[in-house]
Amino acid sequence: MTTTPSPAPAGGDGPPAGTALIAQAAPDEIVAYGDHVLAVEPTGAEPVPDAGRHGRPLQLLWTWTSPNMEFATVFIGVLAVGIFGLSFWSAVLAIVLGTALGSVAHGFLGLRGPRFGVPQMVAGRSAFGFRGNALPAGLNALSAGIGWFAVNSVSASYALSSLLHWRLLPCLFVVAVAQIAVAFLGHNFIHTAEKYTFPVLTAVFLVTSIVLLAKAHPSAADGSHAAPGAFLLTTGAAFGYAAGWTPYGSDYTRYLARDTSRWKVALWPGLGVFASCVLLEIVGGASATLAAPEGSTLTGAFIHPLPEWLGKLTLLAIAVGGIAANALNIYSGALSFVAMGIQLPAAVRRATVALVFGVAGTAVAWSGLHDSGHRYENFLLVITYWIGPWLAVVFLDAWLGRARPDAETAALLADRSYRNWSGPLAMAAGTAAGVLLFSNQTDFQGLVPRHYAQVGDIAFAAGFVVAGALYLTLRKVPGLGPATGPAPAARTSAEPEPA
Image 1 (cartoon, one colour):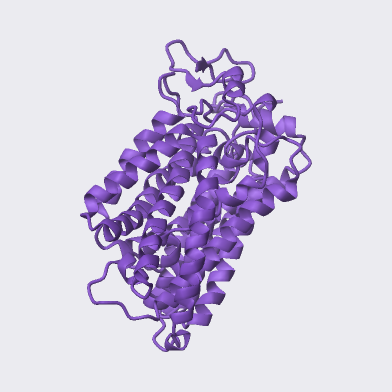
Image 2: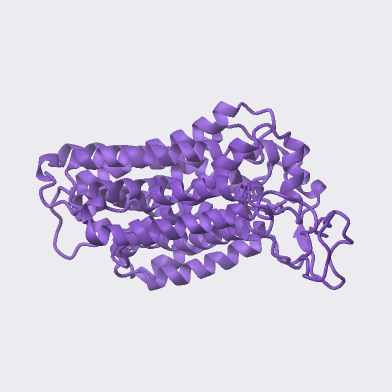
């Protein structure tokens, strides 16, 4: 590990004396890491050099299937039918629609990994500038490394508790230690772990799905007691779950060679997310039509209709799936944190940040072991509130910069003087507009659902449109659009007008 000074702005002299330097791995360290599975990954937010590239796009299929083979995915369907009150087939349509939107976005975002060799939140600097990128990177560090970590830890803990008949807290600690260990080792170990859990989780959940769908009573969920806006609430929740992976896109593609087939890099992650989420969310909706003993835990109610042997296998699969998901959450949360450009001492590397996030996420999960249903529903919707506007800015920036040479874009991503304030301003305004006008959850109702409940929650869509329109407009405002080098000094009234 070396300490690399931040690139000096054009015409500057570099960082001031005494300023802490950003801890980065030297290129030869990254090359030496290669495809070693049990080595701790040295790479943080810096680009992966061509000599350190390895892997094949097919590995993205299991890397993005295994993390969704867990109860948090199932619970989307339970929410749709059991809580929002949708009919079964309306729930299926909303699940497919929301998941498809999130999966397509996820597939496209991973394309920047092979091109630039950087994590997703570093690739986003072209849209937000070096400092402005702290807004989405910081939000993702919190939502991934702590929020999603807590959600999946709770569901895995419930499954392990039901399987072993232990108390919840010891189960939470077992789950936390396992997933932190995987994330600590980093990229290669994560891909390998997902590869070997993929066939096991897929086989167990396929059998479970067949049994539950055969026993379900879809006609019992006729939608007669649907909450106002239930279809849009379900679409938003399904989109939120699938799109929750989008800020991680290139984190797992950046070690692939630059000339890797683009359609394969986009296809396998999108397909993995779509197929796994749609299957288990539909099964979750079907399970909500079956009666469960009073006082059952969430996971206990899910496995109640299953034969005992299959129920135990499913509980084990839920626990393993939660660990598989959280390995990605902690890893990407740590990458997002270091992508913020915060100056850190050399002793603090990505693996250490992953450990810190894991401990913090465990504490949050501990506090959420009870009343997890409503907390999860709200969390899913809150995730969409900032991801929708973030996606609008990122996609528009990619479209506007499509003719820019990759070498020029790569230089912008590493330039600490590069700024594009139109990105964070548009994202913040889009998020605020979506929440204040259209959010509809138990903790807060926006202006429109408060008076027209049938609208549901379309904050993510409204935020996407508002942020996109503002980004196109603000880019043209002097001082807010893309620029490099020192910002122009403010002119005082005593200074003459420039010639």
